[in-house]
Length: 192
Image (tube, rainbow, N blue to C red; front, side, top):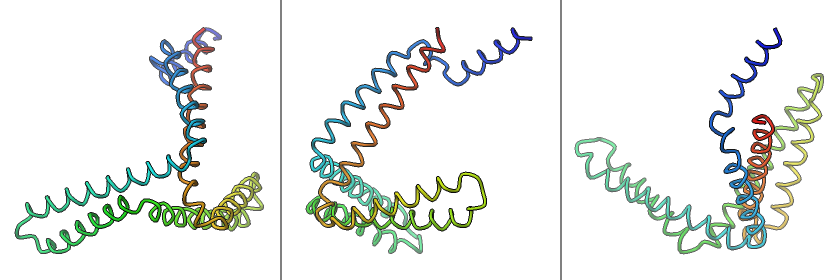
């Protein structure tokens, strides 16, 4: 019976990790690279913010150009005028973002802060409704943290627009890297 359980566990681990068990070192290396890049990003949050805003602007501009190109292939379509107007709006938005990245990052940050604040408020409401359930306190805690984060970002706005996006990207890279490192070390211990 113990042999069967061991075989079942080995099959499940093989299904979950597959080839990663043989190449865990590459996953570990990738995780280390992400952590290093995230730490570098922490030191240059303004540059990371500007780069990400410009990247979004370029993507929106390309999307608008492709939609405009596509609209010329849609002869006879009743909504072609709206298709063209939407394309021009995308192109206009992309140009504005590319030519005014500071303004764009400030506006993006305000929208992000308002979104985080709203999510926090909704989590608090949800926690109050779930207060008879086990673990509701964690939902409440999460909501309070989101509200506080949203308020901190808004209280430093518009200056926070210069660094918040870059900071969040850097933090995400560090967390992502650590998750790969932990996963690689877990796979290594299982492979032995």
